[in-house]
Image 1: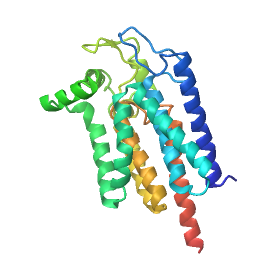
Image 2 (image 1 turned 90 degrees about the horizontal axis):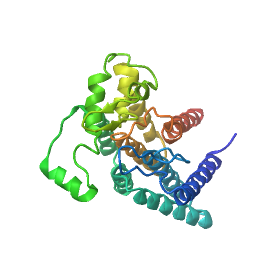
Image 3 (image 1 turned 120 degrees about the vertical axis):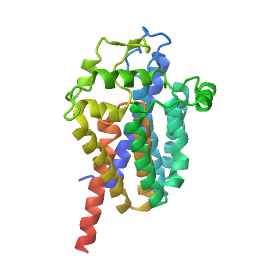
Image 4 (image 1 turned 45 degrees about the vertical axis):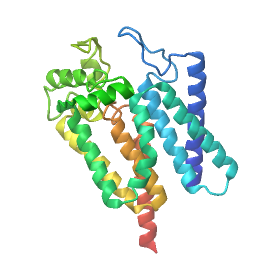
Length: 293
């Protein structure tokens, strides 16, 4: 059996490999992880299939390095390496020019302060889930926010055309609202279909909660949200520093799903469900030890 330190060390080495391979592929195949300028230009297929996939992996790496640094106080050499790799992860996200990626890394440190409050962190995760679920169905307009987005990210409240994809998906793909269209069905249903106004083919719906609803229906959406909420509540049974970092990652992951569909995407096997399973396993172990005492 591996203990916690060994597991974290393995994950840290995995993250080191991800970052090294990112740097190599971005150097050798410069378009990997970057979106094309035109609607017909495709991303070169390398270690990552798209920029958003690269960002979610790098967010996972940031989480692992901060987690490692939060409790490893003795091995200064390993701490310095982790700090270097953490800096490289952040740099790669900034260089990706992904607005979603830049926003999520900017939230890491402020959230570490917010989640120290149990009430604030519970309220925040509920608010984030509510926004994620409601975003595709709310036609929000604001000239002020629109101008801010344009000046900072060179985008509008269409969120790089995502609003057009959401409207199209809700209009065309909601034939089975209770049970959904089936696992991995949205890529098939959107295959070769040019979304009006967006004027390009959409590979997915660009929202994790909408993707969950379309594939698994209202039942699947409710169950998915319950899993997230219950697991988040489990974190309050962990040691404070450890729990704070995990809660921040959960909130960041939920926010990322405002614009990308990684709640049930295959990428999330590593980036979401591994931390989720880890939290439940660690909490149950701690509860059993306390009971035996």
